[in-house]
Amino acid sequence: MRNVAETQYRIGALERALEILAAIGDAGEITLGQLAARLQIPKGSLLRHLRVLEHAGYVTRAPQAKVYSLGPALIHLGFVARQRLRVSEVAAPAMRWLRDRYDESVHVGILSGPDVVHVGVAPGGHAVKMAVPVGERTLAHVSALGKALLAWAPPSTLEAIVSERGLPQLTARSITDVDRLRREFEQIRERGWAIDDEESANGLRCVAAPVRDERDDVIAAISVSAPTSRLSRSKAREIGPVVERVANHVSVRLGWAGDAEGAGWAAAAPWAEHATDQQPAQRIAEAI
Image (cartoon, rainbow, N blue to C red; front, side):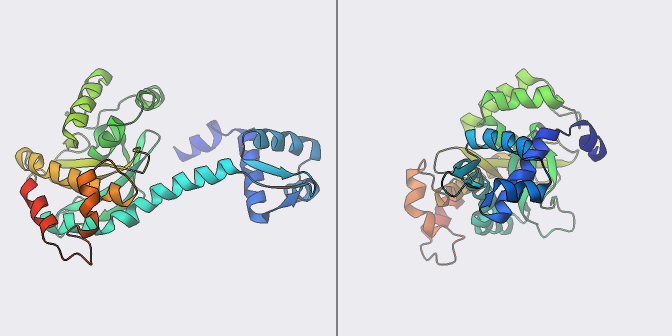
């Protein structure tokens, strides 16, 4: 598959633009002549690329010094990427708390095209554990993480996934009909959490809830995964609201203001090292 991607989907102009951005980033500031010499590109061709990048905000040019540097559009993209990567760091204490409470594997994932990329994991202690390595990709439409992310994504996100790859069936319980998947997203939004009921793999059950940022955008999801022999459907329904509450507290730590109650005691959550107030732990226990 990688070889196909490297040959079939290569776009010369895009690759050249990325090379230009990387070279400018390495240099900090660089003139047209210096950049042309470094990349061995004719100045005329290079200038056309630079004008497109400058118009889009990815490159800026200082008129007097006649040097190019990276533009504000890249700063924004970098901020967004950093926020997503920061999720696993902020969520780590909450993940360990969930893992220790249920002795099952806990994951954090983000959406990347039609897939979920796992960016954090706290493996359970059982000999048979459902822990996915960091960096592993999973089809979004069959995983609890993916469904928690897609349920709050713009409709165009699902449309793009269906157009690009369809909805492959991995097990007999995988949802492969787009209208049925949309109905499930409605249910997920109503209750606040998603479930993978042996849809991505036989014998695996998983519940997940969304993590939001300061703009109320869903940028990640947290899940608890276990074999169906240990995580029955009834237990999954009990754990789901707890995972949702924990995800909300991680969201508050990321700047989300949607949970007014959670904002008031997120710092004293039971997984916080400095927490002395036992009320948060009791209140989460009441949700179980």
